[in-house]
Length: 226
Image (cartoon, rainbow, N blue to C red):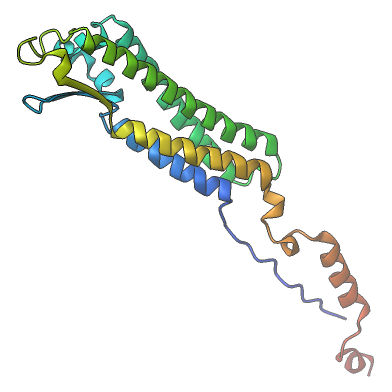
C-alpha cells in the first residue's frame, strides 16, 4: 500500500496593474464629485467667489440666486451641470465595475468584458472633462457679458474684475482620466495570463509530478514486501 503526498497549490490574492490603476481612478472620481469646486468665478475687488460643480446641482433649489452666470435656472449652464453630474456618476459606476471584475479574476474567463469596462471608464472621463469644459466656456461668456444677476452689481463687480477659472475637481478629473487610460493600456497589453505565475496553472507539470510519485516505489516498499 502506498501513500501519495501531493504538494498543495498555493493560493494567492493579487491585483493586476490595471486594477490598481482603476482603484486610483475611482478615488479621484469620488473626490472630484465630493469637492464642489469644478468651476469658480472670483471677484478681484472683495475676494468673494462663486463655485459650480456636481454638488451645486444636488442643492440647486437652495442656490437660485447664484444661477445667473449659468444662464438662469433653465439656462444652458444648468443643463450642462446636470449632464456633468450624470456623466460623473456613470464614470464611478464603470470604474467600480472595472475594478471589481478585475479583482475577482474575471479577466481569465471574460477578458473582453474587462477590457471594454476599462476603456469605457476612460471614455466617460473624457466626456466629463468635455462637458465641464463646455460649461466653463458658457459661464465665462455670461460673466463677460455682465450676467451676474443678484450676486454682484455692475458697480461692485464689473465684468473686467471677475475671473473664471477651473476648480480643484477639474484637475482631479484630469488625474482620474490619466489613471483610467493607464488602466486601459494595462488591460490590453498585460492580460491576466501574463502576470500570474505559470506554475500555479501548469496542468502538465502537475501530471508529470503525479506520474513520478506513482511510478517511484519509495524506500518503504521493501518493508511492505517483507
